[in-house]
Length: 333
Ligand SMILES: Nc1ncnc2c1ncn2[C@@H]1O[C@H](COP(=O)(O)OP(=O)(O)OP(=O)(O)O)[C@@H](O)[C@H]1O
Ligand SMILES: C[C@@](O)(CCO)CC(=O)[O-]
Ligand SMILES: [Mg+2]
Image (cartoon, rainbow, N blue to C red; front, side, top):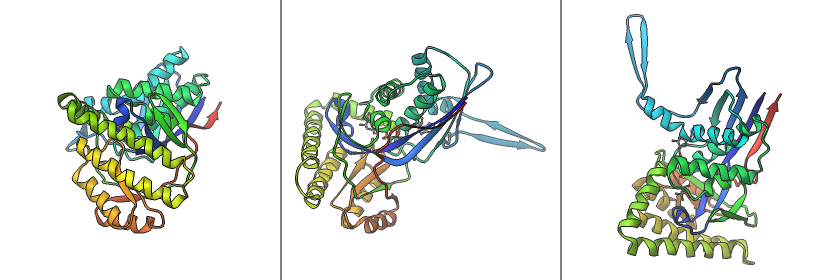
């Protein structure tokens, strides 16, 4: 038997990092997906094929007619830790252990703030649980995905696996979520081309929080208040133009606060300012930062902003909200 499942990437519109401290955040699933195929094996081995992961430290050497490969096994094992934990938890939940092949292909850039870790965890849990005959709800998959992130990263708010499993446009706080009214968001995502590790960035913010709570706590509180304001705007009766103007302003404040936490980079800030100069109403980091992506809100100016991001050395992506989260694409008996 074989199961193919997929799960989407996300952008965090407001509230990354502060969400780890119990503040609310707003996020949306977007139409880039990770696909995971799981099939039963005849033996009891578990084999993972990750087509999009590059492991640093591969050395190739030659002699006359032979070629030798050496890889850094520590790094290779670490890079697959989200997938391994996801398989482990799905098997634990099903109460059976079987040999399986898991094959991953992904459209989501890795370590870029678009929730690649959550999407791979959610799609793996979806595929493996179905393969083992378990019918989990999307919410149950989201909870297991959160567990995977906690085990691998040490800290996670759970927002990324929740958005990836459920899909759509969500307000999230301490493990609970609410659907926000669906709205088309004229956004452009800008990818710096470099990556950041969420585990390390969350740990860096934690160190600052512990060493200077009198400065960091007010920043996190301001982020929480800003998310409440953004929710009020999104659910208000204002017309779209007014909503976008207010959300843009809140995005810019959120970016400044994230910069104060230390998660921006020169390149991220350059893309943010390039987007604003080209007419975006707001622009900020999305996700953990330290590289990765920013996004801009640019009604009527998406093309101009995409060009400005390119000129500033980034890669623009015009994305749409994905209403669907985890999807079982195919089951072959
Ligand atoms: N296609 C994939 N195949 C296997 N593992 C993946 C894949 N995509 C992501 N991962 C795992 O997720 C890790 C990156 O997760 P990380 O949380 O640091 O960044 P992100 O999820 O892309 O961004 P953010 O958490 O800020 O949204 C990779 O190092 C790898 O372990
Ligand atoms: C940085 C963070 O807030 C968002 C990562 O997309 C981490 C988390 O919420 O688990
Ligand atoms: Mg992640």
